[in-house]
Length: 416
Image (tube, rainbow, N blue to C red; front, top):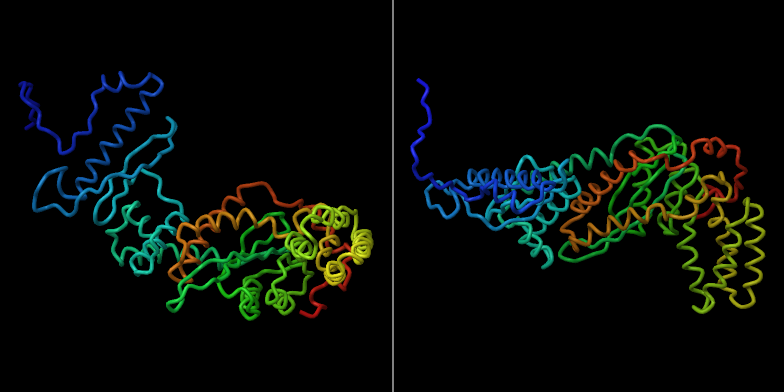
C-alpha cells in the first residue's frame, strides 16, 4: 500500500546538522551570476556534513553509544568546476580521516608528501615543523598500518616509473644532484638525490632515473649508470654534468660518450681566481669563445683569452688550459641543440621543485622516504613534459654522426 505524506502543519524535526540555507537567502546574498555556484557550494557542503556524521556515528553535539570519534574543525579545499572555483570546508576528525569522494584525489606527489610526514611523525623522528604540519593537516589520528599501506601504494607506482624499460636511442643525458638531509643511525647526514634526464631521437625529454647515495662515491655513480644502461639507455653521445670526481670516473667506466662539463658551474669556479670587482670583465672575455660558430674557432678564441689573462691571473689561465676540452665539448654537436647542451640548467627548474617539496619535510626519516617523495614529483613532472612540444629539433639529430668530434674530447679516452 502506498502512503501519502501528511499535509498537516506540524513542526519539522531538526536535522542532525543545520546546514540548509533557504533559497531566498541565497538569492539575497549573491548576484544572479554567482547564484548557481553558491547553491552548488551549499549542496556539497550539506552532503559532506551528512556524510561525516555517518563516519562519526552521531550528529553534532549528539551523544550515543555508536559514536566513533569527534569533529576537529575544517580544512579549506577548492574544487574547480564549470561554474568556477567552489570554496568548500572539509570536516576533519580527531581520529582517522575523512575525504569526500566527489573531490579530486590528491596528486601522487601530494600523497607522497603526506606519507613522508606521517611516517616521520609515527616513527618519533619528526621535527617541530613536521609536528605542526601533522596537527594542521588533521593527521594525528592516523594509524601505523594506514601509513604503511599508503607508502606501499606510492612506492609501487614510483618504482614502476623509475625502473621502466628505455627504448630507442638517447643521444643526450643530463645528470645532476640535489642534496638533502636524512636520519641515519641516529645521526643527520647529507645525501645526494641524483636525477637523470635524457632526450631521445624523437626530441622528447624524459626523466629516466633517480637514486639516493653519497655524492662523491665512484662505486655509487657507477652502479646507477649501469642500471640506466641495463634498462636500455643506448645511443648515448653526450653526458652533461658537474665535475664530480666520482661521477666523471663512472662515466668513463660505463659509457663510450663525450663528457660536457657544466659551463655555469665551471664559470663560478673560474671566477673564484679573480677579484670580485673584475668578475664582469673576465666573464665577458671568456664568453667570447661561446659565441663562435664552430668548435675550431671557439678553441682559438679560448686560448687567446687564456693567454691575455695569464700575466695577471695565472691560476685562471691554467684552469682554462686544463678544462678547454671539457667546457667546449658541446661545440662539436649540432648548432640547433647547443643552447641546451652546455650546462645542467635544463634541470634547474626541476631541482627547484624538488627542493621546494623537500623543504616541507626538512629532515627525512630514511632514504626510502626521499625516493618516495622526490620520485613522485619526478613522475608528475615527466607526465607534464610529455604533453608539451618537442624539446629539441628532430632533424638535427641526423647531424650528430656527421659532426667532427675531436677524439681527444671523448671522455672514454681521458683519465678520470
